Amino acid sequence: MTTIATTTSGSLPRSQALIDANAARTFEDDGFTLQSTPEFAQLVAAAVGEVVQRQRDAGITVPGDGEYGKAMSNPIDYGAWWSYSFQRVGGLSLTDTNLFTQPIARSTPGHIELTSFVDRRDRHLFSAVYSDPRSGAFAGKPATAFPTTTGPLVYRGQEATASDIRNLTSALRPGERGFLTAISPGSGSRVWNEHYEDDDAHLWAWAEVLREEYRAITDAGLVLQIDDPSLAENWDQINPEPSTDDYRAFTQKRVDALNHAIAGLPRERLRLHVCWGSWHGPHVTDIPIAEILPVVLTANVGQISFEAGNVRHEHEWTAWQDAADAGLVPDDLVLVPGVVSHATNVVEHPDLVAQRIRRFVDIVGPDRVIASTDCGLGGRVHADIAWAKLEALGEGARRAARSLAVRG
View (cartoon, rainbow, N blue to C red):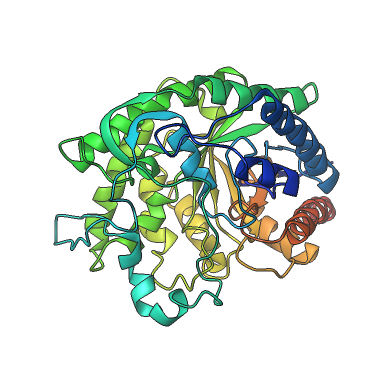
């Protein structure tokens, strides 16, 4: 019988005990590196075992660790997928300049610069929304401050990554495939740089330093999901809006750096996650996927995860059909579309989930579709809603499979 595999985009809701334990951790002298204890490590290991089983119960066939090894000390936190890297990369320190205080930059034709997060074009268009804490457009608090690159980048996360691997592999059943997430060079290099001579050198330094984390995960037999919202999301962080040709060239550098970082790793264990950012804003300045898909498809990965349930991007499933018709989608590429969304509290009906899944099955076939979430649900929606969405995902995949069997 035909089956449809299911997974998530990584982050899942943390228990209150885990949130409290992270909030109680102390920092090292640098002010942003969280200290751990054997008791805390045991709490995380037990929590990973529980979240893997709960994913199974919801119908998820390719489970992750919920990103529980990535600190989140508040129920709402859009940035844990990123801020974890500060714990694992040396050469960073706290300064007076970060993503929100860095100088406003103005790009010119042929020369793109990322501006401050507060200077994003969506924030200008909806300034009243973003300045109103009741709007929910950008809420929450990260577990650590965002540092700056002030020295040569080096990898120092060996034990933390090994712990993530141990926790997940211990929770998996024989023959069960699981995945861990890691940040991309392009997203990592968006921290403010005060050491490298230019942005390109900073980008490639991140590519070099992350190779070790990537290899450790794939060598363990796990799927590595590389989180790179920057590929699409950078578009909104460029002011004024650039030409699409300039942006594609800017983005190609980030894909090239990623390909360098994953060179030699098994392609079938590599999943690239692309999204437009998980904050609950209007997103009217998002770039259409069709404009960057030819660049994204040059990534040497076996799977691509992307938003396909978000109301701003659900219609863009046709871009994948067009790319397939044009011969741009590799014959062995697995599509991992989001069919339930982090961006709404409304729980999707399983029949809608099944319809969304079938769109992509019709493009590449059931063996090359893994139904997923748009982005991580942890830190974005209430835990009860998140798990209801995963149950809808599991049931929707079963209904899609049944309909395919009937259709023959």
